[in-house]
Image (cartoon, rainbow over all chains, first blue to last red):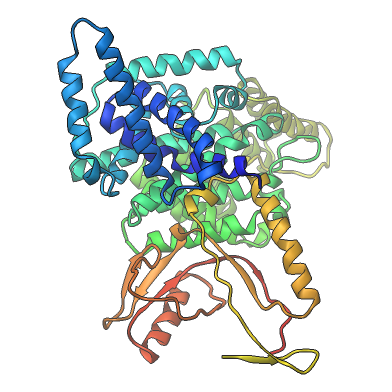
Length: 424
Length: 135
């Protein structure tokens, strides 16, 4: 590890805390980012000679703050009329410096920074891009590559997001308990979006997008260190770790989707599974069930099964039942139907999903599951219709190819019958 | 102290080497960087193992997966997160095979009943190598 790599890691690690604090001083995202950037440049000059500071984040906050104040003062001298309110703000910042660097504010600083990125005015894609740029510090180029868009398109997306955030009012006072928990929920949802953006890729894109999953896991660990007793944050961390543990087994050598049941479980990442299971165990102790915890518990049922045949489907059915109560949605019911088909057979599952037809008429996975169930019941003509519909709705080539495989088997009499399942 | 007679018949001492680092930094490592670090450490470990000097090696999972059992009170208090007090010192550790966190907490409670006071931090182990030291 070279000096520069070490410094680079330290700067990345300190980034959320430093930008969060600078944002509190300057109340402007661009100013905070520029101040941090300048502090990093000075760190690159100073640290190799003087050695790393004991607290990298505090060093960066102090230097960044001084640099930005200098710049404002210099600008003030050149301006005919000083911006009085802005200057007095900075005065306050200076006098409270000692108090502010004691770490008490860090939790709310980081939460605020994340919260700004998931402002409700921003569409999901802008939230994710903004968080990756501002909080994680990925370059525009890196983010563009992960989203498979051009650098200039991503630059534009981030600029737009920043403009919207600048117009929106974000409270800077220390949040109360209710506000804090609302912010936390919004931030958790945004982090899960980042994860899914990385995870729901097809094989061709998986490698380029994998950093999004890593980044989401890093952010949720950060959140969990700030809020160590929140069971839903434990649940979210567990959910992402358990899903991520299967990444090496999700596609075959040709890039085709490998269903959960057919995956080579030896390829699953045991460390991620161990961490995920430990987090669920911790969350359960709080006896405050929430959607992330239940989804993580479902993922854990798969992780605990050494072989697909050993999966405890009836427990999974119960967990989906719990999820239906906490967070009712046709997609949850559809997932539950897959578990029901294992426990009570395809007819019961089909009966369960029939009422969803209207709400899920545009959903690829609905027709995939339906086709699979019909196939199991020997209703091949109806299965073919459902699979055709699924192919028409497929979002990726891999999804379409997967359904076509079922259709191909239908054409061959006596071919093994498989049920369409979620490509987890 | 635990003594071991080395190959030349001299007495040697078992040392525990405890690893500390900023988790914000290590959790920011890319997979490639992490692999590279482990590979370099592996070279050092391999040399020690060949000399028959390496005992168990464990890499712990992040502190976010930790639970702490404070046994200075009865019944012990269970808290989320790692051991965070600075007045107490690390005195030793166990590695126990447990089905889940509850099972690990049961073990910690039994140990705590035998030796009250202080705390146990319960942390899942990510990587474990048993080593090659004689018992």
